[in-house]
Image (cartoon, rainbow, N blue to C red; front, top):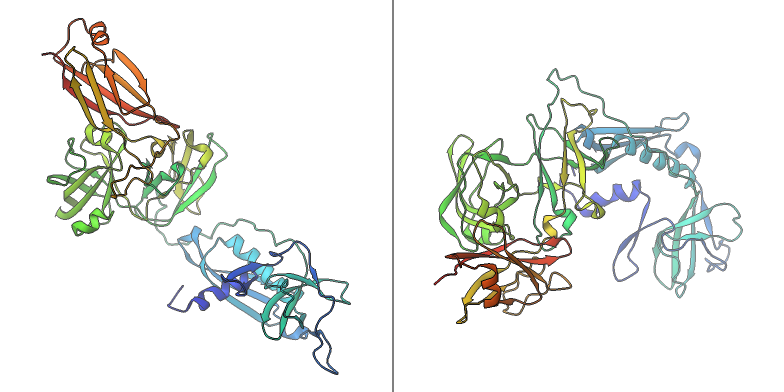
Length: 510
């Protein structure tokens, strides 16, 4: 809204423009559209008499001179950086102008269609009816269609009901007509004299599950451009046929590492490490530790392995212009310990995960598919100098089981080993009540691989429990000469395939 106001002030233009009726007759107030309660009109066969000498149904029709001949709709245009726009619809001659300001954003073509429908309803719905039905008759509700006796043409939609000894109903006549066509229209370019915007920097992030979103919704996009202009994101399974998926109205806080980030420690507050990043625009800020533990200040850092590590920070200090040193860290958040172990090099991408980083618009059936994505300034034609086109596979990371933890290897007296581990959950697993967390998958299966550190595995097994014994005979068959160290790799299986690895290097010989 352009200025503060009540909820009624904000909703009234929407009710008027989209032809809604407010229904407070039930336990929960609701907005209803025409015909929402029934497919056919409800016949009013026996309206309650209004008294001797008065008709049971009062019909009112204003003269044509009182009706509007022009409708003006004000709106914000998302294709023109949300600048104010106006749509006009006219009918014949006359000087009566009706105006309405929409407290929101809509494309110019849609606004013109809505203005045309609004003006048409003012004429087709100029006839109103007032009548009463018995209090026990509960079928008519705001938004219901009713047919009046003796009215062969047209139907009426209930717009208001007054409850009492009888139900006093007000309705207006409607005609079932198709809506005005919505013709897309690009905004006129402003003659500002400035250069055309260049291609944005667009980063696609396949993020891990946060517990409350579907896997395909965790495929996000962040964009940066100078000067900033609204960016639109398109997608296609091919190199042509792109369709709009989302619109980015805010510039994301993006930067790059100025110092390499080594591997860290997961699950503990890092009081000594630091992330040093140069931002292309924007700023960072410190938060109390309690706010950080509650989810504030989350960075996504592209690791040397290509996956994104989620890092939280409590303290932020600008040590040079646009260069920030971030300390008191939590590394490998939301199960991104594999990216943490890989570390990140100088120049690695860094993104602050705030509301400017939006879902890219991936659909559920597209998770795991390689798709073409195109990002460019809103309201501009596709062009290599203003858009960026990339191929990405999204919606995968959020579906992967997390790595098992607390891996142990106990050597048996006969030369075998007993391995055990603890599973983790990415869904509904934040409870601290001490009870077992729920299963993320309908089955519990793990894949184990054993070999020398840095070498190919010599044995792979699949088990359905949280432990497994590597028999002495199998050890001797796999390793005629037992090396000093072995590495255990454990991954949980899920619908998306093998999950993130939990690894343990342990002493074997001796």
